[in-house]
Amino acid sequence: MKKPSVHFSTASPTVIPPAPRADESDEEDYDQSQANAETGEIAVALYDFNADGEDELTVVEGEKLEVLERDGDEWWKCRNAKGYEGVVPAQYLEVCCWS
Image 1 (tube, rainbow, N blue to C red):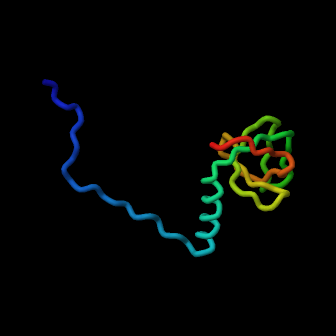
Image 2 (cartoon, one colour):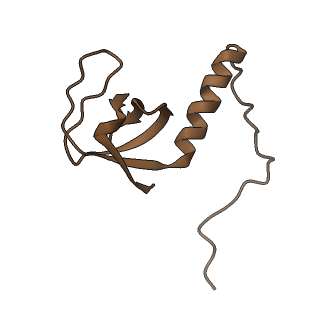
Image 3 (cartoon, rainbow, N blue to C red):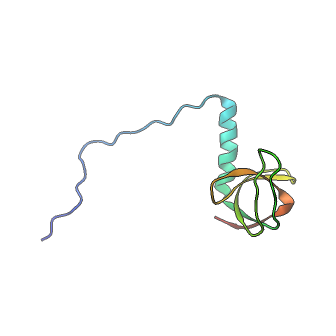
């Protein structure tokens, strides 16, 4: 008979508490972006868009983006495959699927 190759410790696991929040407004921002991120919406860029401002995200036609926030019908905050985040004109995007 073969001996098991995995051995588990008999000690109790250590529970790591969550990190404290800086203040309540940060928590609201986190909760909102987390809720939007959990929707798993993926949008595809319909056109190229070159960012002009620091908060904007440059995208190319056909690029898939994770939609983080939909703040109205004008601009959506998105994340690209490289992890960069910024806003893109909503008219340049089309929700295509769920992650």
